[in-house]
Length: 477
Image (spheres, rainbow, N blue to C red):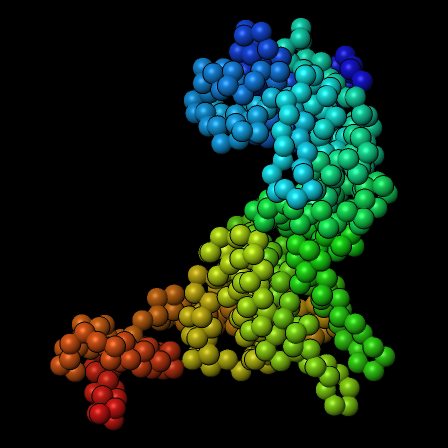
């Protein structure tokens, strides 16, 4: 369906002009060379919703080599990372554009890479898009902006519904990652999915295994950083996709028998995630590390679950097992090393506070808490507070008050002892001079001893540290 602008098109054009004034000059550059250019996909959807950003997607009948030439005369920077798939990108000012040749693509059942075939028309290109709300376009080079909506995406947008332009089976076969994308869009935009979409996700979940770990990781990260990740995670679990890409999550739905009642760990984890998100202002805004840690913090429970004599369930050392499992899963999904280390560290530490749940925190315990969390102290504050999901209001208030007192203790010791820079009172050079030894592993042992004293007793001063070091050296030898 090709329409004159209409109300929706006018909204999109107005948003486009206000937020991306360079788009019209790019269209002029393509028109001058005799080619068509249209704004497509998510930017059209977002323009109608009044949330257009500065990352714009276009499609054209120009081949990639021609697109590169046109962009080189328009953009300040051009890169061709995706040129094998028909995409050339450029940046001018604050606007980043990706221009893709009309195309179709599909996956061989055993392949992780799509086979790309260039198309002949804008309408054909739109027919291969993932969802109808992303299959709308603004044609910019045919005598004025024209709003094109062949699959009633505008109506679905109004109804907040995700449907596919063609059959769901064909769409998900062409690119199985679209199943995860459905969950992500539902979480980002608070949309529902059509019944046939959810049905196909359940029937075709196994197809996700042909998608590279990197693409799965990126899609899951976008879902997790959405406004309401619970919606998307629930869809992944209910469809069976999570069994393949993140099996530790559905395993949290521990079976509850009539004799051993305990929390639904899966539901608890989603609640902790939501409560962590509510505290993210302490971290400067949406934070992937804290969201991963919150979602995965209890994944060690299924492996450590045991029944207690007389009733009840225990999960001894689930934080240690959980940290290991999280590290393995995030490595499999090709997350970067820093993210993997930070998430696993937070999971390993998430129970530390509860060892002092009634507030019996010595200065030594506070120092160790700060030292072990390192640069993740604020993340650990957020995770620990979020991990309280009790419905007992009095208990929740008590735990919050105790944790507030811990944070206050940390602030005091930070001022008095510079906790963020805990070091032994003597350095390696001083140790070697006092003990009259050369560089060797013994120096490390001596520094570890001094650090332990520093953590236990606070700043000693060089004189007392020297005295204790000599005493240690004498006893050691």
